[in-house]
Length: 489
Image (cartoon, rainbow, N blue to C red; front, side, top):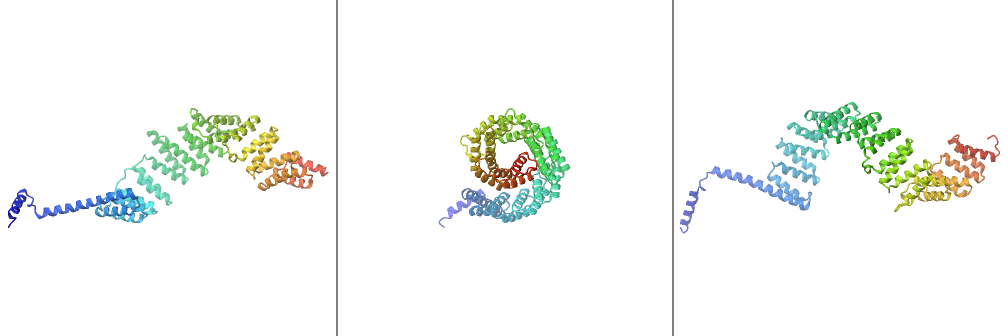
């Protein structure tokens, strides 16, 4: 034959090189290896395509899901691929499918902890806490966990389902493995507080303190003290809440958070002297950097001093705040009120004037209380026209400002002019507060000035019944009785 020489030479070369001498079993082994390598390669290729599709079209694209499904089909034993597929299914709004695929994988690979925990998380997320608890518990039983995270997740699910006994049991089990775990102790403490089991809560808190003293951790305990104190105070146990905060302050004297909460509790309980002491400690602890204290803090501190009867301290706190926040109008307003209350009308009027003329200050932003304090200050200084203008400005901005309406109505009645307008204003004020004795007295006095003595007597007697033995009302009743010739009255 024409090519026999060439073929003979080629066969001789192959035989001599050994390539034609493998038995059939060797060919089969290579065939299996090639098939396995091919599946891995196909899987890897689809996974790469899925990553590209996810990058270009997003997590919810059909192409991403399609490539991930193919990757899993070619390599079903890869947990990494199963996890990515579950993620894509969840993004597509199909958590049930994700759960089914992970359940199938877990049946085939029962010792894969990561898959079991992922399955539990998806069950919890999709609103199936019973299944989530089951899978978390299975994961714990398969292998001792390296952290308390799984136990905490189970306990949290139990709490959501109202099964606090099981939650406590799970956390106590975690403590056997992780006795110094602050998160486990903290969660136990929260559950005990909610159940009003204060002794158990204190035991948890004591353990946390011991651990933190060993480790030098300081931030976590302050937070725990304040959270526990807040919950306990809301439950009505003021004494216990105060005790916890004092204990925190003993250990962390500069804790602004604990001192602030303690001060607020004292305010709620009308113990202004004690509240002032707590707030004063905050200012002392921040003496080198008082700018870290907010305007609201100074407002609360100043009001606390004022209510405690320490007006000088209240004024000092406000003046200190103004050095830090010179444009804080709320501080200026309160300072003006303190000046007015402590018989410093000139200073009060000056401060109120600064507020009214503050740059870029829209009048609508100023509260009714500002106009009332400003107007009364000017009235007391005999600046009658200015006071009237301020009250009118208040009424224009706040038509239902009954205090301003009454103030002007009574002032006009006392002076015997603008009686018709005074009558209109006091009737508007009474629409807001029909049983206000002072307003009824003003109405009666306007009637008196209009010589409507019977109407005046009726209104002022109503006022006197609401507020017996008020000297101004008794004086008005005496004047009316005199005009009506009711000498005995």
